[in-house]
Length: 398
Ligand code: PMP
Image (cartoon, rainbow, N blue to C red):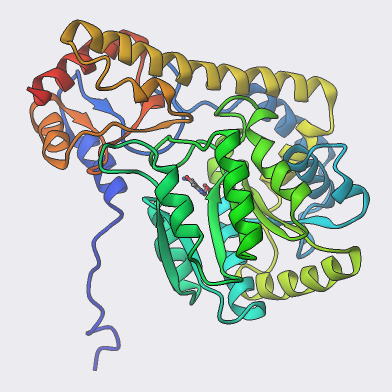
């Protein structure tokens, strides 16, 4: 008898298949706008110098590889919470907020999902339509009932009115997932005014926000990107925040992130954290140490932090200039207005508004690889290739 006879094959992650197809494409002019990692002008995903220097220091000072605790590296937790909530946050002073280190932002989301199912039974979670596809499967796997609120209209523009209208009808007490900045996959972010409106609905419906903060520093700046998170943390007694160091520290494979919980009082936070450590014990036991130690080294040292801030700003500005550059390159084709949103969007991703058929033609005829939904990773571009891309887009838009 074969125990595995009934195990069938599932399709791979479509974005990873896209990467594979790109790898096999022999066209020297091929363009990879698929997978969501930052790339520099050479098409590489570099290790920031601040990370390299921190790693060198760690090699000298690290004395043991024994487990770190269930909540991870304490210095990392404190410094990351300050980065997210602000060093002067009253929540931190009152010990009403705490970080649990997780394997990346994905781990933080899964820990949040399991916490909701175990400790807040019956609560559903509401995701933007569209959202990062892993949100859909991850929360379903965690056993939560998943629903959606509209985010982008048929005109491929942010539809705040539809979003607010939908949130107004959510069941009281349910969880609403919000992207802090650099919305994945669309690149459309809420304005401060929109955020305040969302906050009012959250209060009125007594919803629990879960804010996914995977791109701090990639939108308008490190502090600017935290604006909505800090607004919600100040205005609401309770909040869940998932933070990822994958993009802003370039630590992708080191799986570095945290779930930050804000609670009504310090006592309650201790209760919640006991649950988180217990849930994490069954998921990954204790988190991986290296990436968090690197982040703690950088954030705890003025010189390394200064270097990192410069490097992060460099990445942010590169993506922003590519966005503007693409719209300019589309102008001679009479398409700058149609694609004006590309320059308004934030972060690495752009919902271009290209149809699945146009995306397919771009791939087959021009070796331009982007996700079927029309999501392009703008960071995958290089200034010298903007005209080439604009030309290809123009050809599939006629
Ligand atoms: N949330 C969003 C919206 C993301 O785009 C990502 C990464 N693609 C993550 C969370 C998780 O990132 P990681 O697990 O690599 O830290």
